[in-house]
Amino acid sequence: MDLRITWERMVLPFRDPLRIGRNMDSGAAHTVITHLQDAADPEGIEGTGESYAEPYYGETNDTIPVVLPFLLAAVEPLADELRGDRATATRALGLASAAMDRALRHHGGAKAGIDIALHDLVGKRLGVPVYELLGLSPDVPPTDFTIGIDEPAIVAQRAARAAHFPALKIKLGGPSDLATLEAVRGVFTGPIRVDANTAWEPEAGARLIPELVRLGVELIEQPFPAHRLDQMRWLQERSALPIVADESAVTIDDLEGLVGVCAGVNVKLAKCGGVGPAKRMLERAKQLGFKTFLGCMMETTVGIAASAAVASLADWVDLDGNILLARDPYEGLVLGEDSRWTLSAEPGLGVHRRD
Image (cartoon, rainbow, N blue to C red; front, side, top):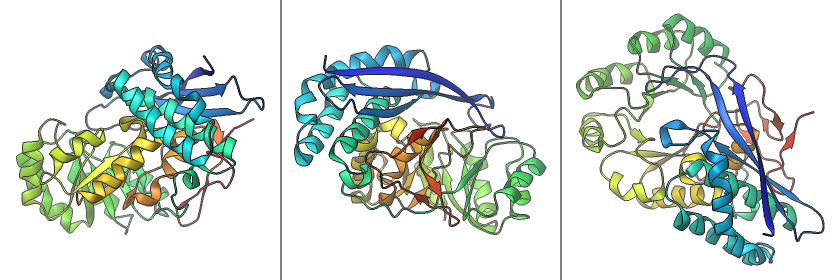
């Protein structure tokens, strides 16, 4: 095979505990960094990608390495086209994504690792940043900052430390949701986005809506289990706030079924399969009338840089995974004082391993 892949498993502690409604284990980030080389390339250029291991979607640091070679075999027939001029290589990137989908359903994290590495490799070879390769702008919306479930006073302390961000994303689904939001509002004046990660019950969620409006909440993310679209539709009909699907919006194929169910969708590379799939999903979501939220897992700068390449297509941005890590092993993005990521002008993703 001309395309060769290696990988390294990483377990990266969080800066602060990050508990969410459907999983109260704070733990650490589990991710796989992928390294892709073209044996036929005399310059030895390497593409770097990231496969975040999210057990909720059936992936772990052990399953991803098993799947990667199988997916790469599906991409291998496109190797010559991936070495072509810009138009040819860009077309081949889309075909590579489709080939992985035909070869294996699901496994969005593993697919993202290869897709991101391919975009990085092609961008480096052509001498253009990934966002430019995609025909997108480097000007992106500011990111919010995420705070996990904890005692209200502790959440408020973390909110005060992050008060320079234009918006905060507060994880809910614990026993003290309203008290938590009251405490956050006491130290933060900007928009609050809440994410229940499937943990609410319908009637209780509906009772919270007036309080959320009073407290200046901007949106409600995934209040109910992924398959309960009936409950999500029921709440959206009763809510003045937009409901945003996350666990219910995994790939572009889920979008049609969400029309009339919710107001927005959260697109993540590790769910949908990488840079190219995220671009297409964001564009299709816009066509269908959704507000678009670009989210992330607790990824390193590799995954966040790949997400930032398509962030100009999003209405809301939640790209803070690397900031939430105690130590990010990669660098290459700069977060401005306005909380906007400054995308690197270097070819590919522009990310590098820290010393």
